Image (cartoon, rainbow, N blue to C red):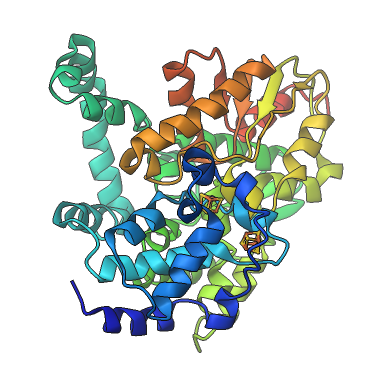
Length: 436
Ligand code: SF4
Ligand code: SF4
């Protein structure tokens, strides 16, 4: 492990300045919305406590320890504390910076480092490699996985692994970029030119959400441009402390998308949308990419955000369904997209929307949190599923693939009779019934 003085020097370079770290006025308004503080009631597991820890390490008053590392990784990075904070403290950037430094200071197991290198540094850097690996996984899921679970062998030998295996999403039979053409036009007049990121996991594991999204856009008069050669947006890498690879991927996307003309960049994944909105900030000091990135980020909109902007063009058909809605953290807290989905649900004739208690409380998915912090994640998920059960809704909607998968798993684990859907699927069904 590196010398603590060196670490403290480096932390000062990575973290926001001391005056930013000192913006926290210790009011405690964030405590009531923090899922990890709710679990432990320990000050160090609260936003306020973590900020104090980061500040103390950055100032060299305390050393990085295993407890410090644990608390930084026990945090979900859900950013509910940012929404609640009256002082405008940007907590997310602090904890993300601390995680970057923890990794480079050696607070990661050799196995963890190897897994990260293989997944983020190799697989997720190339669509081709990710698709090839997903095809192998598809065959495992359709054959060996079924046998291992049905026979109970996996649960008997590795009970934890059996649960984690169930948490992983199913690979789509057909990948979305094999179906969606590079330029897809609506049946009638082109009213808007939109670009679309098919994504990495969205492409191979949630292909139907991408297909529904493109269908929705076309039905409301959009030309949809899904450039070939695009790559992962880089959010997975940035959230795991690898900003160099995140920038490399973002540059590739900026170059590829800049070859096309479009008015809006529509995202159907809360995490990707939030990160693409950050491209401008990511390249603010880059002499080549600063302007390009800023212009790109300005046009990024979540699907629901975009649909509200063009609401006059949308004619929903009747849908007699009973739904509730879970706010993905990267939509509600990071992008502040809260009212738009609800506004659209109100427009659908026949639809019953039952408000979800604590809808902006994290579901416990949070990237790989549900794997590395399985027990805590399940406690958080249980609370979410009980709230969903109380609505009596037959469908729970959510605009992020991680939440979608976590809620699907939660419905089965906690016996809640609810179907999980992406809002694009609901909108597509309704638009199919449109009379105009
Ligand atoms: S990001 Fe979420 S889990 Fe982390 S301190 Fe803030 S509210 Fe708590
Ligand atoms: S709400 Fe903001 S200012 Fe108040 S304790 Fe939490 S982080 Fe600090």
